[in-house]
Image (tube, rainbow, N blue to C red; front, top):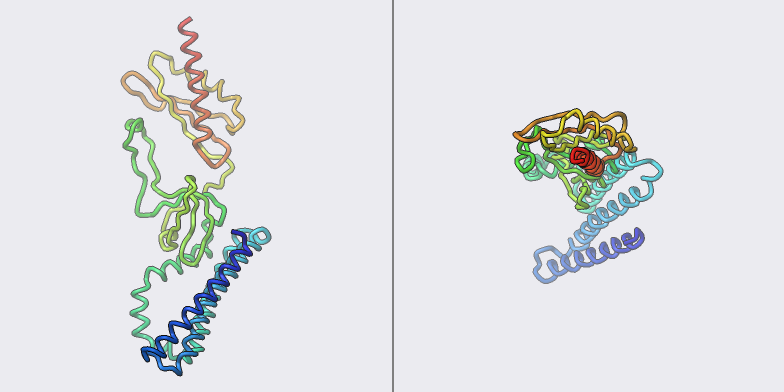
Length: 301
């Protein structure tokens, strides 16, 4: 859906909701007499102000995100849209109270008990809002960054599936993907599997954030070789094959990492260009397989 079509849909939704509120209030006042007839217009205006304020705030935020990101960058756009969202909702609340003839002083001074009750009931929502403010202010990441979000309650875990029983690797439990939005309540991440995940801001602000921004990253590749092959010979053959790979930065480290009853584990640690581990690891495995097969063919001659 194009941006203009979204604006039209929002405006139509606002009109329909306003009509629904007006009809509902009218029926309550005229049929059931629950609401006095004199308060009908005041309540209708209040409902319309709230709905219109929320919809217009969302429209302004969407417009700012669409127009400013190419000019101001993702970081500045996030701060501006976040501030616009808070200001929009604050103005909407003030307008609703004004229409109801409720003074801000009476709300602040006379609503202590109600404030405590509502505060306890809205702890999670408020913590999400404050978490969003903290994220915007501290900027551990911005829209467009590829990150891994791992909650602080969980550390590294050891793998327990084949062929990792003998491995000294550890896994980082978390959500990995590209940040697409930071709003008042949620941080949206599109995972590597192309699934959109909305994480509450109060969880994200407490999490360990791994930001994948470096131009290259360390990729470890392991391969199991029969002990009938001399390790030095295998390592030298692998190094020669890896020398022609343009995505590897510098000289990779090739060494024997571990051993089993009949095999030993060759590990290749290489600084590889890009943000993902799997593509370079797949190419390195192909090289290792070719190197080992060439050694096998030489031995059989």
